[in-house]
Amino acid sequence: MDIVKLLKNGESETVEFKNAFGKEVTISLVAFANTEGGKVIVGVNNAGKPTGVDVGQETVQRYFNEIKVSTYPQILPHITSLTIEGKHILVFEINEYPMKPVSFKNRYYKRVKNSNHLLSLDEIVDMQQQSLNISYDAYPLNENLKSLEEALMVKFIENATSAGRVHLQDDLLTNLTKLKIIQNGKPTLAAMLLFGNHGYSIHIGRFKAADTIIDDLLIKAPLLKALGEAEIFIKKHINLSYAFDGSLQRKERWQYPLETIRELLLNAVVHRDYKNSSDIVIKIFDDRILFTNPGRIYGNLTIEDLKRDDYVSSIRNKLLAEAFYLMGDIEKYGTGFVRIREMLKDYPEISFSIEEIGDFFRIELAHQPIPDNLEKDLQSDLEKDLQNRFGLTDNQLKILVTVRQDRAVTQQRLSELIGITSKNIRLNMKKLKGKGLLKRIGPDKGGYWKITLPNEKLEA
Image (cartoon, rainbow, N blue to C red; front, side, top):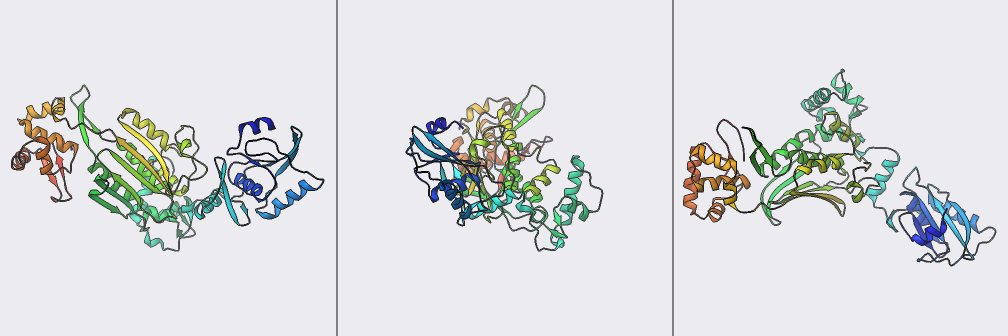
């Protein structure tokens, strides 16, 4: 042990200084035991300067016994007596404890940077589950199997089999029991989430501003349905453009890569904390999408860890993760953020950020605002091709370009952007409908515009 180096480096996630022995020493040892282990050096001040402690013949044993009787499960630190600069100091060392959480007089602590923090009730439960290798979604519910949708269970088994990651040949109930999704003839929470009426929601909204919502959707379906519904809603409210790739085929480019949207939706439902009844909330703005999830990062991971490609994931809901992995939706456990960063390499205009806010985890995809320069759009190959093929006027082409950027755009807003009257907007849109290029989906309020090129099924 290089004690001089420890004193010089100061307090940290694994080192604490104390002038004298007291309950704060035990609290720090408990926090270390619940995190990654550490050392409490007694007989030094906050700056790491030795001040010394009186060490009698039975002092060390008395300290050891006090720590032992005030902690549960009992922790037994290694205690070393040293002399530095003519001063006696004691080094109390504890490893990460295998059976967590450890308490000091029925209070639980963890180490965060260079200080000790009380654990919340949810953190205590999570730590215990991790210690016992228990998955929260494996909890069996007092529900009848008839409450599960058989068609969804069949679809799950079919998808898992076709993905080639598992070979199931028995009847439906036996297969789901083998996968532990059903236990002792009862559905687990995972089974109810995947195939039943579970009571949790995904709430998605399309916003023009923080206090102005255009459209929203509350999804309460089984997760196998809910993910598809969420994807459809998001695709409806993000932009789609087309470009030539050197061939006769046009290449579509969504405002955000759909694979990333899918990955973030999976991350939300697999890693959320189902002890928290709050909704998964997704907010779509013109220039960004926010995914807010109940529950902080699980395990000992930090935000900084998730920014590295070598992080080791802790999984709160193992059965859900396994189910989506078997269906081929998850490629490999614990690599979601690595894949997202890889997907976004072809989208330099998009920034990706993650943060924790209270008891929630939030992810933001931010898109650089598209310039409101319609003349520039008119010069693209696609727009010129459209104009030539369908005999469009400049104003009609501007309408299509604007609708492509904002499906929910109003006729009044089109009038303002293009610089012609609302009456002329309506006349031109009628002509575009007549050419089969423009279609209204849904009602005037809450609906959206769709661009359809005849025989090509291209949608804006």
